[in-house]
Length: 459
Ligand SMILES: *[C@@H]1O[C@H](CO)[C@@H](O)[C@H](O)[C@H]1NC(C)=O
Ligand SMILES: *[C@@H]1O[C@H](CO)[C@@H](O)[C@H](O)[C@H]1NC(C)=O
Image (cartoon, rainbow, N blue to C red; front, side, top):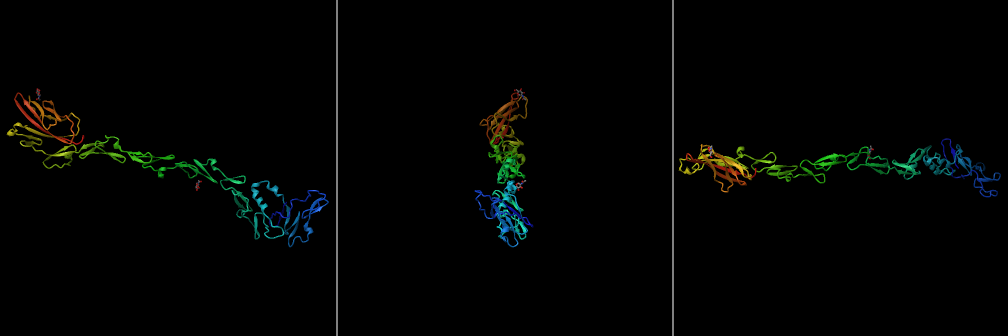
């Protein structure tokens, strides 16, 4: 049972918990015919056989003092300001049964609020529930700050004008009285991986991807720009990256490093003389006296033509494989020089009787390790006498028998290298052509002095 009193200025809702039994009239529960005692504020009415309320405002002189007005009430009375009027409020229980959510806190609040006992003026609140007096005004009570709310620990108390509400934080939903974390991951917000967090969620991406600015999609990471460990070339691909190496390098087994390929180890035929491995490539080198021809071959330098020789004046420069010779092109006694390469033994000199009349000097250079037999030098008679028979032979210089003569016809023969020769070596061969004219009974011979220089290499 409640009373609501209405003041003229502001509406004041007052719960009277003090002097109110919860019945309009008391009914004796046992033996009604003999029951004559009623609780305070009631008297037995024999006519109606009920306990009847006493109107204290009439029976008690000066029930209220001063400016206060007396209001009779079941089982008691109230002293209220003169301007107050009293109406009966409906039962609070039926009111709160309707909608527990929104009005719940208010209801709780109202039921909790304790009013000062009538008659004692201390802390009397003339303001509505949820307000408190401040001077002449009623101001909102911050129930959240004062801790006089009924929100669950999982709920957030939000103060409102005249009341408060219990709300769930963002990312939580209300189930029963509690706020429960929403599992956002159930809604497939994330492109790759979703991690539910209390009140929120976050998206994660697979390796090689990063979360896009929208926080949900995943975009490829360009690892090449982010310091991928490729030693040489880096190629970004969707979700990962690839390392590659320049030509002449092999990718290491771990996929990052580049290791120089030793091309020289592949084949001994890469270079004619010497292969020099270099980072990422190789080069061919030639011995002294040679220059590179193309990329792998070595070619003899003709020092006599390039002017790199050191031969003195009057000396003849002869180029040989890998080097050169400086020769004194003089004829030895009793020979006299008649042209650049020709010495003659004049028949006027008695010493010349048993010597070849003419000696021609020739110089040639061959490489080491020629395949044999190998034609080396062709000899040809310079003056042909009709009917003469010419024979050719090696007079001196072939003590080891490396060479032989193959006659081609009457007037020419070929010097043949018959055994493999390894340089560097020098031969000086005296080749003789004997001309016989049996009809005229005439015999003459001429010699060729052949200097053969065998180079140190097969090129
Ligand atoms: C993504 O998340 C960051 C950090 O949590 C935040 O600052 C930013 O506003 C979010 N961006 C979007 C589009 O939600
Ligand atoms: C070569 O010798 C033959 C005989 O063997 C002879 O008939 C011929 O005339 C000679 N030729 C020359 C050019 O001497």
